[in-house]
Length: 112
Image (cartoon, rainbow, N blue to C red; front, side):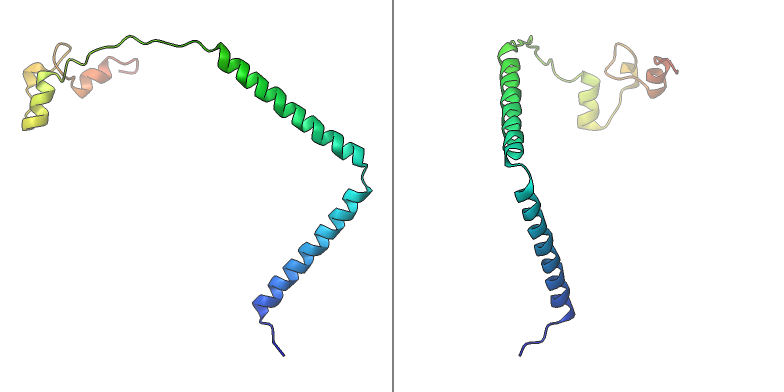
């Protein structure tokens, strides 16, 4: 004779409850109008086909976008010098240089 632990009995109770719910759903399904269930399934398939057709239609209408290619001229000299030597040349600060001071960048905003 085997004895069940508390965990096993709780799992068994959950499975029993699930089996009862499943059986009741099966009975409810048998009592429903079969034509109604079949018709709703066909409507769902038809909707999926329509969506697939619309997606394909949109896909065909898209035109290829060709972007102009730009060459990267490389880093500005002051930025490169900072990256290599950790030295920031203050003479290069400003609009013509490779960087802006933080307060200068904030000053160009609406809030600044």
